[in-house]
Image (tube, one colour):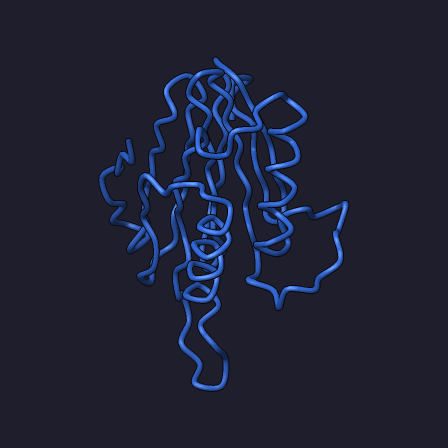
Length: 167
């Protein structure tokens, strides 16, 4: 990481303005939610762990532990910055993979994708792009100057894919 990059670890949320870049490395079943307000070039990234059941308590140490809590936190933060029109905020989603298959364990990745889309729809926040599902890990770079999201997937350790740009 260089001084322009802000690491957003699992369960964490960060906000940035240019020239900062928000980064999440090694995303599996989690969802990385990128919210962008173009007029102010304000970028917010949440590395969301779990879909939740709807009645989870806020976790101050991990505000992105659950989808609903993470989105509520981000909306409150945008409001505190004076960004109150939620229609002006655009979303991009990355992650939600199923890295391991166990018959007795539900697919957390699919549930994370579904719950995130549902919560964003409830607030009227449009999803402008996504790279979700599948069975490979991803790393994400979110550029606050443009709102561009770059995703690198790792299918096999020796065979990284080309970067995918979600513009």
